[in-house]
Length: 629
Image (cartoon, rainbow, N blue to C red; front, side, top):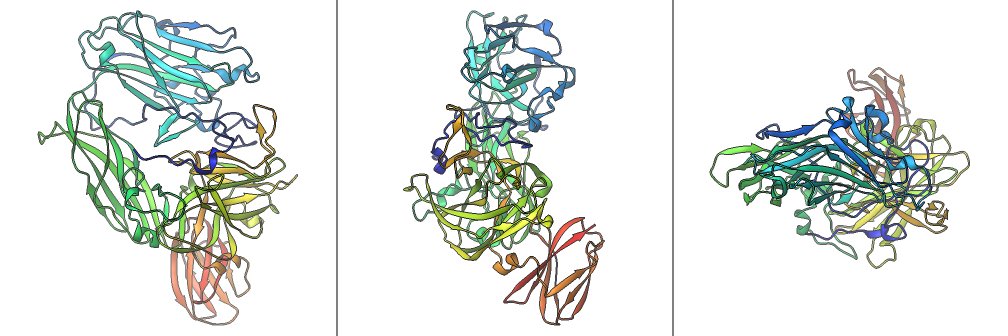
C-alpha cells in the first residue's frame, strides 16, 4: 500500500483540529480543542439494491429501553438513553439524525454535555447490551449492522459480540475513518457499519450485542446509534469502497515526481484540459466481497456528458470478506465540458459466468475546463465556511495541487462567504512542496492584497499575481488564500463537504499563532499548521492575468444590469473582440466574435446568478460582472 504524505501539518498538531468561531458547518466549539484519530475503520457503504436481500435474524429499532440493559461506571449522570428528537445532535452539519427510524427513537450519549475542562477526573464509561440472548443457531453465516452518527475526539466507541451469553466477548472498535485514508472528525449521516460475526455468533443460540463508549477522562463529543440488526450473510454480495478518479490507489505510480516531493494522485472536481491531456482520469476503487462464497469481481465505469467512455478492471477472485484495490481500463482524457462518472462492482460465483450481484453505484461529477483547477463542488454545494481574517484570526487556507503539464498560474479564484465584510483584505499564496523544508513547504509567492467589495460577497473572486507564476510538471504545490487580523473586517471563504483524501491535503496555517493551545490555555504564539477535512473553495486560474486584474474596466459596458437574460455590450470604440459569458463555476455559457460598438446578446432562459462578461482582443482581456435575474 502506498505511503500517505502528511507534509506540512506534522508541526504541533498531530492531535489537534482548528475550531473556528461563529457559524462554521464543521466545528461548533470555539478555541483549539479537538483533533483527529489515526485508527483504522469499518468502511462506510450503501447496500446495493441489486444484491440479494439478507434474511433478518433479529433487529431492534432502539425505540424502547426495555429491550436493553444499561450499565455505567461513571460518577457523572451521563448515560446512554433513548432520544426521540432527531435534532438533538449537537453538530449542525450532522443534524438531524438521518437513520431510517430516528423519529421513533435512537440511542444517544453526549460526553460533550459534561461541559467541564479536559482531564477533569470524571471519565464517562457507559454500555447498553441486549436484554435477551439472540438465537442464531439456524444461521452459520451472520452479520451485524447498525446506523450511527458521531463526532470524534479522543473517545473510544465500539460494539462487542458474545456467542456464549456473555461469558466471552469479541470487540469491534468503531473509528472515525469514513473514507479513503483520512480520519474524519465527523461521521457520515448516517454511517452504516457492517461486521461479519459468523466466527462468534454463527450457529449459536445465546448471542448478545453490546455497545460501549469511553471518553477517556477527556472532553469528547457524542454518539448516536439506531436500527441494529443481525442478518444472514448471503452467498453472493459485493460492495465498492473509496472510489476515485484521480489515480490515488494505482495510477499515481505511472507519474514521476520532480524536485523534492512525491506524486499522490488526487481527485479534482475541475481540471484544466492541458492537465487532463497528460494525466487522464483513472477510475479506481476497493472491491470487497461481503458474501460468504467466493466471487469473481470487476470494477466497471461509464462516463456520460460531452463525450462517453466506459471501462472495466481485470477480474479478481475474492474469498468471503476479502477485498482488492483495482483500476479499470482504459483511462480517459475528455475535452472541455462537464461529465458524470458512474462506478460500480460486478461479481459472479467465482467465474461460473452467472452475474449474481452488483454493488451500489458511486457517482462523481467532474468538469474539464480551459483554465481552472479545483477540488470543491461549486457554489451550489457550499457547506460551511472558514475565517481567514477577523479579530481573532490571521490564517491561510491552502490545498495541494499536483502539476502534470507546465502551466503559468495567473490568479487565485476563491469563493467569498456571505458573512464576509466589505473592505476586508485577502491575498493569494503559493508554496512548493519540499520534503527538506522544516514544515514540508517552500514559500514561492504572495499576491498583492485584494480588498473585498460588495460585489464580491457571496461570489467568486479573482485575486491576481503581479506576473504569472510558472508551475512545472512533476511538482506539487500548496495553494490558497490568506487574510489579516482586524477588529471589524471579516474575510471568510467557502468550503464544500467533499473530504480530503489524506490528512494534510487541505491545511490551515495560523500565521501569528493566535489559536489557543488546549494543553496550556494560551495562544501558540508561533506559526502553526492544522489539518482540515472539508474542501476549501479555492481554484488555480491559468487564464490571462489581465482578465483577473481588470474587474472594473471602462472599455465597455453591459446594460441593462441586472438583466433578465437579454443585454447589450457597448464598446467605447468599435474593434474586434471575442466575447465570452462565464458562470461562477468558470464554465463558458456563451461565446461569439464581435466587431460592432453595440452588440445584442440574448441568453433568455439562462439560470439566475452572477456572470462574468469577458472581451478578449488577443492581447488583453477585459471583464465586467453581469447579474441575471
